[in-house]
Image (cartoon, rainbow, N blue to C red):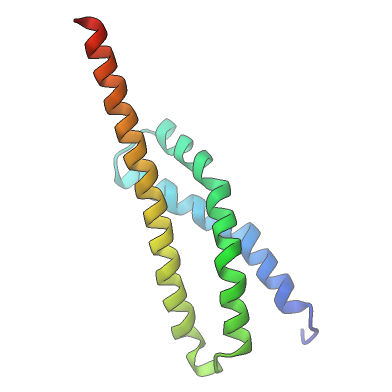
Length: 118
């Protein structure tokens, strides 16, 4: 396909269907590695799904514009790998913030139940 609309169509598909799948896989695997319960993983996935999808919409279309508009073909893989490092950092930071917030909520709930039992 050499029509002008092919690249925007691929970016839209990549940033909706594929992004949703890969972000979900990332958070599920991360939850399993943390030895979290399926309910906790599901809760984190539900709370992070839309924010991560919209964050991807902010980063990747710009990255693809640079990829296909400025970067020579020989350097595109290196460029996309560098952007991917930034993206994984964003995912990791967001997941860590959610995990810390959940841990502090669990600690405050635990403290409240201990105070009630005294």
